[in-house]
Length: 384
Image (cartoon, rainbow, N blue to C red; front, top):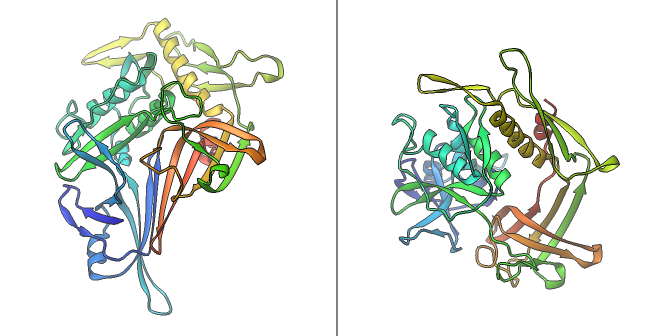
């Protein structure tokens, strides 16, 4: 495994010559992170500087476009900490984020009011705020949108909060559409590419003709497993309140996620007054018709309900010498089957996170299937 370092213009600066440890965490619905620890050498001190770009080369399969161009995940160094212990050992700790964190460098402007699939809405947001349709000042340099397959999905009525963060809105639409995203790097062509994709169905009974991918200690392809299930934050029916009209009336609509009744019915509330009743189209102020506005509220409500489902979390430390190889037999975003006969558990779940750890010449891969338990920030956001 080799770590190559570039500046923001994708000019090569060199490679890390000594490395104590690396944790490389990739996420399907969110921004990935990394952290590394390295001894201080003249080379490492020169390369491990905040703002530089790190690309991991480990021989695993990467994204290849139609022209044969190779695109890899990359991360930007955002934090550097240098220490010297009582024995005189000096080390550099560097941390950073995968390049999709750049999306929150932009606020969405002008406001987007569209009816389309989540895939097309995401691409529209990217093009208009950091892509070729943005003003020259707002465009990301050396940036393109990678070619995508049609990922399907139904159309939704969408309007963003005025000046909402681009990264937050892309994440919300990606979660609603079960899509993964990142910004990749092409070192040879010196380009960045927005990568929007959908994982394959590799479950035991998939109908796509794919070879099933089953993780189980019975097959000796996992070393450790941890299972968590929680219904503490469940909700299946949501009330959504919109912004007031000129008469002060606030429309309220509902989304019934499961048709549940009695004790199975769990109601929650979403205040969506940030979805404006009017927006600017050039110099013209446009009032959104009530029926269209109600559909926008329903779109928001359906997205909010995604945060209130049953939480199932299955974490496995994968045996890297087993029958299943990362990026060959399975990849981030794929849906697979997790099985633990002794616990009586078998679930089909998406690989939402993969963490690669390199230490003392050994590699360990940990995969998270399903959804992580909600963080404190997520819970506060729901209550707010």
